[in-house]
Every structure is written in C-alpha cells, then in structure tokens.
Image (cartoon, rainbow, N blue to C red; front, side, top):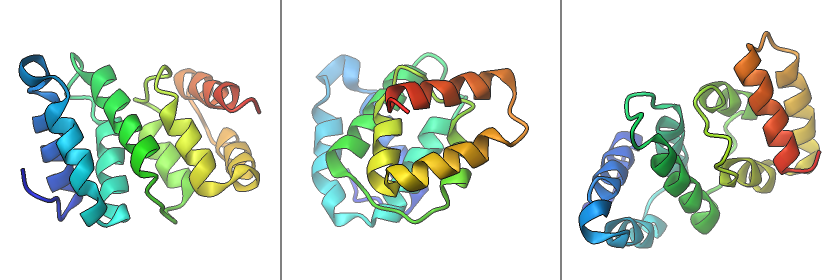
Length: 143
C-alpha cells in the first residue's frame, strides 16, 4: 500500500481495499486509515468526493460510500471547498443511508453556514431525487 499523493491515488487505494474485503475483511481499509495522517486533508476530501459521485460501481456503491463515510468520521479532514460544490458533486449519487456525510458536513462547516448553504442549494433547479436527498440531509441533522 502506498501513501496517496493525489485524489486518484486515494481513490485507487480505497477501491483496492474495498475489493479485497471478501477475502481479508476490513484489514486493508483499516491499514489505509492508519496511513491517512500522512496525507493532506484536501487529497482525502477530493478522493472521497470522487467515491461518492462514482456511478461505475453499482454493486459496491453502498459499501464504498459507507467506508468513505467512516473515513470522514474517523479522520475528520478539514476543507474550505465551497459546500455548494460538494453538494453538487455528491448529492445525486449519495446513498441516503450513509449518514456520515451529512454529519461530517455539519462538523466541517458548522451548523450556521450549513443551514445557509442548504437553503441556497435548495433554491437551485434540483430534480426530484436531489430534492429528496436534501430533505434527508436535513432529517439526519434534525434541521
């Protein structure tokens, strides 16, 4: 396992870890988490965003997102990426059962900014799926 130096490296190491879970359990993903303290938060965040928006792994999508969420919860990477950009990138493919993403958003951005940005996001031309997922984010966060 190599230390990720780009979001693509992160994504590749992550998927390599997920893809061997049926053989070795979550050992490799735990090893990945243990080396992430050597990785820039922006690389972690950008890699995780790529995982949440990836539609090319439908058979493992929930597991992918659940473990990406667990990394957010465990590492708590910080970012100043515009929240609207993150929402636009992730909400369409986000699995509503992965509560770690909304809770990380709240922790990273703070409740006041999150409320403002969610209201701003709601005023965009959302499709029905995006609107339902936005309602679910608010439900998870009791907003």
